[in-house]
Length: 221
Image (cartoon, rainbow, N blue to C red; front, side):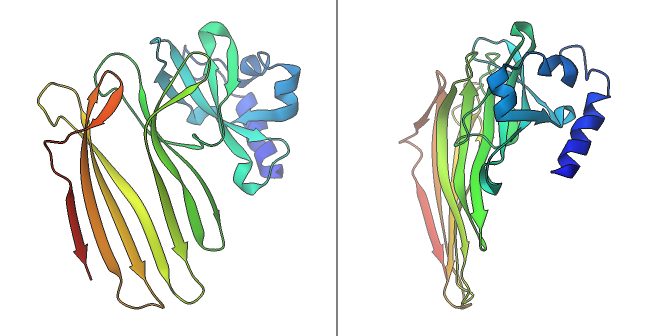
């Protein structure tokens, strides 16, 4: 907590980061009393600029909850300078921002995010592709629940996903190719690895599984 306080103080002393993003002191003035009791913002120099569903510019910044456990302490807040608003986003969907895209070039960001919890050698959570509305609501377009587990007897189980964004049907919009990899080993023995591929076309802000592109499944020992 002491290190976090030092970082916040350092950022407060810095000037604004770009013409669209006010300095931390200005943003803090937009917080309500309830906001200040609940969370505080930090590391705004690591902000992520996005475009909301109405094409308005906004920023995703880090927020630390004042009274929360380790897995619930850090969240994301949405800063909308034009409206002088700060909205704390829901915990279960966005804790980490992996990439920001505009798959169909319509001016709205598709955001690849992650939310997870970990402990005792295991991690589980959800990877999602989302859009964010001006009221802070998060529209989940596609998601995958992943799991990584390591047992005390050297057993291992993991199920995770790799996403590639490619134009699969030649319409100029980047679609989704999904590869799910499952790995399992018992007591340190040779692992069993299986992969499954799916393809989804991105139309009207929806991912639709493409039946004409067959699923592919492969299993190796």
